[in-house]
Image 1 (cartoon, rainbow, N blue to C red):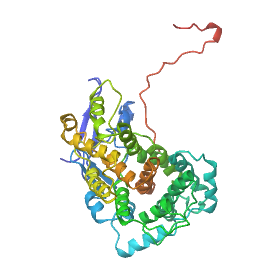
Image 2: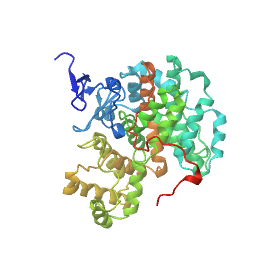
Image 3: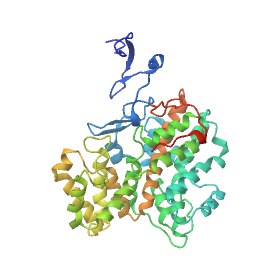
Image 4: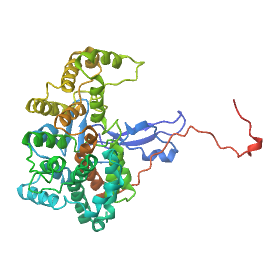
Amino acid sequence: MNNPKVKLIFNGKEEPLELPIISPTIGNDVIQIEQLQEKKVYMYDPGFVNTASCESQITYINGKQGKLLYRGYPIEQLAEKSDFLETSYLLLNGELPDQDQYEQFSRSIRIHTIVHEQMRQFYNGFRRDAHPMSIMVGVVGALSAFYHDSLDINDPTHRKIAAHRLIAKMPTIAAMCYKYAIGQPFMYPENSLSYTGNFLHMLFGTPSEDYQVNPIAEKALDRIFILHADHEQNASTSTVRIAGSTGANPFACISAGIAALWGPAHGGANEACLKMLREIGTPDRIPKFIKRAKDKNDSFRLMGFGHRIYKEYDPRAKIMKESCHDILEQFNASDIPLFQTALELEKIAREDEYFIEKNLYPNVDFYSGITLNALGIPTQLFTVIFAIARTVGWISHWHEMISGKVKLGRPRQLYTGKKERDYVSSNNRSIKK
């Protein structure tokens, strides 16, 4: 059928309005509704859950089939065969790099890992007990005050430099957040290490001792980075696109994305999961909390189970489960009560009819939170690590949008407030009880 359309009839009186149907490469068809402006009618879609706000070629999710593709490649294949920098190149450029392209990209990232020396002084303005995400929002936003040579968003070269700078500097900024909180000196990047190994070096190394990167920890964390690199038009990515549509510089846009990611319903979910496990305490207390989770009148929620998009098993969770169990075994952590509780909760969720019926499978936040904790990474740093990984997704979407025809983001609303009324002076106002 050529040029398929749908017809809308308002109140059964007006002439039918034909709206074009646009078919994607894969996924659901989309109804183009721009013509509704002629009828002075808007669509009402809270949370934009049924609205395609943009066209993108980066990531595809099929929640019913439990499928996640980066530029067409299944996440399972990338997590098994790729590394984070290669995946980053793929997301940014659309294709996997050849050997020369990979080496050039890696070299470009390495030369941008150090932050401006004056930025080290920024941290002194924060309290020692400040949440690392609050520091990240401020410091990343301030990058635009130091790197003026890459702020012309209409220049492809500037966009490329800004993208590489952001990917390179995020681990450095994140590690500095941690070091500042615990009172240890900042560690300069060691560019002979891998992207992930360098982050572990800056996080756990000290000037007084030679730090050796554990290859098992390095592999597990690199896999976490890959799994969190992008996830279509989520809340933080949409925030970056909205900010970018105004013409804001990329550093400001990524700072906005970090702020959106901070919420416990988004990037803070793995941190919330660990807090829940600590609240449960020991395996023998699990039935009590399972009962609370099933009680509709109880506000308690089991964090780390189910997903808004995936109605089948989260494909990232399948991969992360393997890494999680490997880390627990390698670090002899399975005897620790927290991890015993997590493993028992995982077992119950797979067998309990309530969880099965509602598709409340353990998700990627459940396994990544446990893995990060086993690696010795503080809970408050979990969302920061998510931000490091997601930066490449954010900047890829920003670059895709800026490279095309930019339309200023401007959602409409369903107004349910007071109708127009006249101002009344205070002595003539009656108080309604």
